[in-house]
Image (cartoon, rainbow, N blue to C red; front, side, top):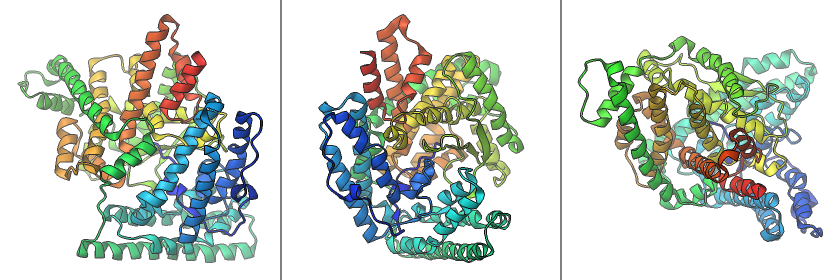
Length: 594
């Protein structure tokens, strides 16, 4: 799963005292004669210079460090400041008539409008800053400052020192804001904030001790680290007490969004133009198509793997038994992370040899163990630099199986067996998330690069899986296509699961049945997905939504262009527009063809 610096950062507002620029609060500038030039001036660097002081954590995530010494907090005064800022920027955006802008700026306008409207809705409508205690965690930004070599260590430590002074106020405000939270997000907040303590542990103390900081600065560091750790421990203790109270009196909020909130969030997050219910209905049709194909492949492979074992009449039993047998072939538990590392250069070579897309050897991918403060939601994910610091390292976070029981580890490894593990790495790394985000950082539009659309990002990763198998990766064997179909069924089932749980009230029992029986997932994978659907909403639909749009668009262009269609050119042009919604990329590419 690709980690996006989205609304957890967007909703936090700066605690630091600073004056907003005259542009941020003053009257709109007189439009230039050329509306495209005026828009580029107003919503280029000028806009972001006013935006980042309100969102320093997100700025750090995309490599903007000018306001990195500020920490953020959410209180009533700052929410008012943020809403006033959003209203002002939306009014400025609406002053430009879309039909006076060229295609590039018109799509920038649409993307930015959606982003600002979404931020306002999170503050006023969804109110997740009240019911999601896990949105309060200082670890990410501090860790990025300490581990990213954007400046000499002493300079970075002084930035961290300034931010540390606000940690106690940050958690005090969090406690004040939280009202009727979900128990699921409360328990996640407890786990992740306990892990966050590692960021302020012995490694940081060693960095300070080995630095060029003065004696006074080191003493101040010690005082502020101690205060920060106390604030975090106090927050965890407060959450534990709150969780006990919620269990006792039954006043916790349900994690299920319900139809109205879900459809609104889907519209902002996915930006496909369709409804969540429409996508849900399409997913059910695609699920049947995939299972029918897997049924045919299972008949072909049954004699090879199951010998004389009687073939069940029920297709789900037949497919499940065959997949279960084939899944015995998997990586060793102790070498799971190593197996991931070994596949990276193989995939790079395949992509280059088959001319699927140009890679950038100057941006190596580093596989690492997932930091403890990020564990608990997904087993792995890409952590990429933003457009302000594209030269920083890209990490492929992989969680080792050290803490898993033998039974749990075996269940996990069978899920990511010898055929599926490469597809998983394709999705996360090459030519999936890692490659797409390198291209996104080259986009001339900051708006398109920074306000990335999750459905496009996840959709590209799912599309890349299919594209790689179409190119012959995996040997074009029935085994490869059966396991790919099982994997692809995950994306489809994600949509069905997410909608069914959040809108239709699906129970845990029915969710596990859907995942294990209908989608052939292991108990371990199904349990993890149930946890994830309780902690997130809409995001699980982004895979199938984005993939469907990209694949349909490619097939349309292939039909229209015939022999002139060039797959590599399509990939590189598609990715050149940053992480824009697919519907906007289609507009840009079709306009260019015309």
